[in-house]
Length: 304
Image (cartoon, rainbow, N blue to C red; front, side):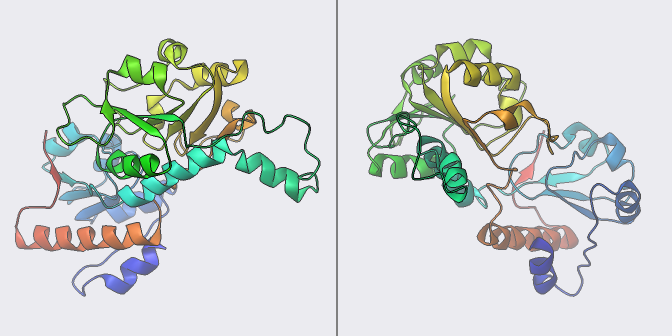
């Protein structure tokens, strides 16, 4: 989808080469003469940058730059830029979809119905299904995505709490300490970057402080959650369910423990990926390549 859109939009002076990131030989060959790396998820580490002696810009397609070695990029005078806001609508909608999928047991009902068993479900099988209306939803982080999500949740009848490091002067919902949010929320949704401070912020200890029977949603970064502790909380019933678009290690292997959890709904980090997001991303790609060519300031450049 991205390749087709890029091919139809790039100016004549901009040549784009497409390679499979799993093919190390092709990646190394393409980078040997590249000025710009369009980066999604595969780590842009020191080894990768060593293959790109002419590289001038790493353009992140998305927001999070935790998979880019910013120190090494700076050492090599390679600039880094991201795209805040381009995927906010898509991730907002994916977050809401995961909340509803877990609450309404959409995946298991779909599977049962396709097996001809949807009209003969065991008594009480939907006892734990429910509505967003009347629930308390806690948003950890209050950037572009939760700002879009909060009024939607309120319109559906939810009480919105949020936790952010800085005081929000124009809040949608109530700003509370993290401990309060975890204790009072029926649904907790993660919207923070992966940093040393937030790594494994959802762990054995924080899961124990969450409201019994709560639902956890993560469309941010997999490393925010201790997955071993999460599996225990799901198995014990401490958590009613989880909706994840991200995992700690991606792509995840077939035998990942969370895949066996009937109360887990998991998608393969595609919450951001819509045609509309790609169109907005293309505008930034072309604009920053043009600015790089002309020696002008970049949009959304990351500085250490």
